Image (cartoon, rainbow, N blue to C red; front, side):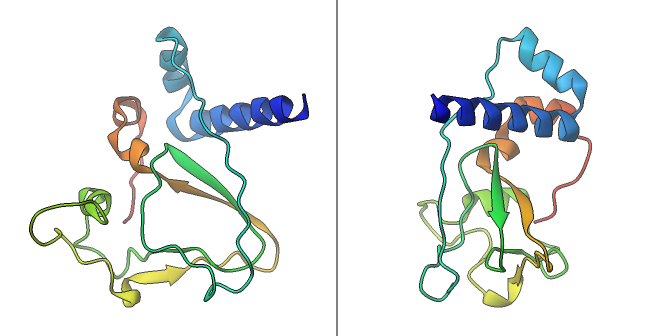
Length: 146
């Protein structure tokens, strides 16, 4: 029962975040199409020593990821250093392909550590589904920096 309640709360939080980012019209469209904002709930623990546990550069496959951070560790592409990198380049990074990748994102200097400050922080990162979603394309009016 507690797991189901947690899952329902996280689903509600995800819906509220999507409404904030895309606006109420996107939620209405999702409801009209009987769309579900649902999926796997993953709780992960990363030790405070990033040199021991480090994922290589990747894009999560989901719409977005909520990450609670109580210390530095997450690195993101620094938009000040990657002006020529597009969202499509990021999506292709790490995918099997014939020939060279469209952009080399393995250079450590392109990445910056996310500063969560003195207090704990909730971070939202966009995933593969975000960059491919027709709903997002119709309703998102902001920009995504890569």
